[in-house]
Image (cartoon, rainbow, N blue to C red):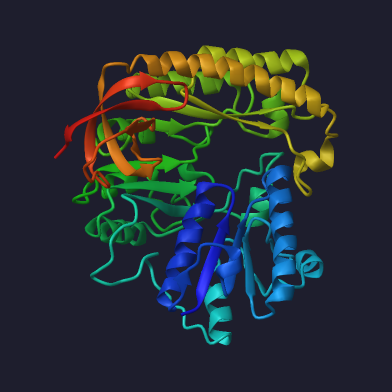
Length: 431
């Protein structure tokens, strides 16, 4: 039986697409391998949002060049954000790659497979259709909209994934119904800008409409969605989130900067004041909400005072999680064309460290309030002998127990807290 290995880096959309590709290859009679060297077919699902990610991709492609010299029959496929509409340069630099296909372009993958005599089945679900299928995890990632129309000045995504294209609402509901029937308890709806879902569909259904439809599915316990754009999230969506018990009390809401001039240069489409009001509205409508955000430091021209505005906003907002990144120039973006990357690397690192130190203290205090309380945890698997899962507010929880808790909703009493995870004792299964 031929074997495949999928190497994935980057966002959850990439992870979801890798699951889809794995499903296609499973249906074609392939078996998953444990490493590059044990595979007959390798798929690289790439990310170039940051220079560091791109360097890992290029290093892996060079590694595979040597492997293919040793094993000429090895087939190498590349997808993800390294691949855009003009891939001639990638083909020139890496002639050992057999196929480059754009993110989510499964028809191109299937057509290539047919030419190779690989009978890949075109189908809706990412898992084999057989009665013996068991969900490897109780959680599933569901792409609902591809691409982005925002063109933030620093971001390469619209140039690599294209403009926004929504999946039909009925198709998504059908997929989630089937996954729930097969044991999936939680779905995360994905999009580069998930709040734009539906604007390009007949009748213009929106994300709130989709949440309402999915909430009626039997056996589905939880629904999440990301990533949100502060200028596009609607009051209707917030109120729908508050009204539906299956929608988890967690929101990814990237701010990127706490300075209005930097936000304008980033082309984010909102002010700090508008973002602050949005956060207050969300917290008023959904009191138990946990908020995650993204902050970029070292954007071209960012002064020390402008950075301090980001630091002050993080202190004021008290996010549960802050995803930090130093600005990384991306060829072809607006910022790459119009601005010079003039903030030294050591200054970027110092600014990252300041926000990390602040956020560690904030997260420690927030999580300490859970000490001694019982929380609902959907158990996703085991790590180093401990069961792990997440609360509705997306906090990672570990506990030890001899029983089989995979896929169970458990009541866990929190006995240990930290900025990054919680530890506790399992009490009971939640029906």
